[in-house]
Image (spheres, rainbow, N blue to C red):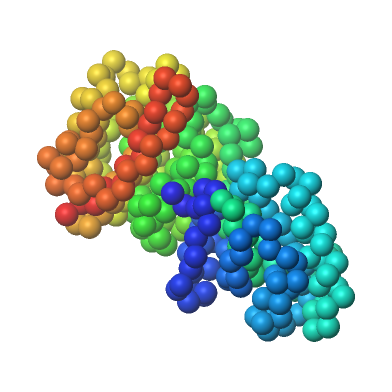
Length: 306
């Protein structure tokens, strides 16, 4: 799901891959692969790969560990060793302060993946809009990085009409606006509707926000629906039994979404919402499990309206 701690190998042209990558929140940077080596490879062998790549401009090596694949001291020693050896190698200029090429060495599962950094993701910018950085916060609020992930799974792009029928504090809608989409929110709780507008003003996001029931939406047409229905002790369903709530909003999503529109939402893992999706004309494309705590696992579903 959007990178996490995995390393992906891109075979697509770099320009469109870079443009897509810059939307991501759960990944950090995109690299053009130079070489893959087994753990314990010599620095000389990695430097030889860099020379063969024919890079232009100064370089600096950065070593990163995934899930503690090597001890911190070993990672630091490798980074120091590579930079020191490179500085003594004809044909390579090392600049640790302001390099023209950052060479990332990622340690994972017994391998070292060496690549030239192409670009960073939008993670830093996205995280600047996280919970404690906005005027209105609620304990049940969706994490901003997960909201961006869900919008990406829904293929939201510039000009898309995006509806969140359980808009809460407005996290999804602010991120939709950042993607230059038309953001529309609905919530049954007047306090949430009023308070979320404080967040929209804070982030200068143009959002249409309405008060209403997700089972009877006052909307006609949308390209995507991205939402986090209420669950657990800290969220209220206002008297609605959970499965009935999902049935109602999925039925409405089927009515509102264009053909080939996307519905991306979260649900408790125990609720059989997949059947409801099929009954309402959706094809389930992706499903991911997210452990919230020992007693609650949620599933993230991305469905396509046929």
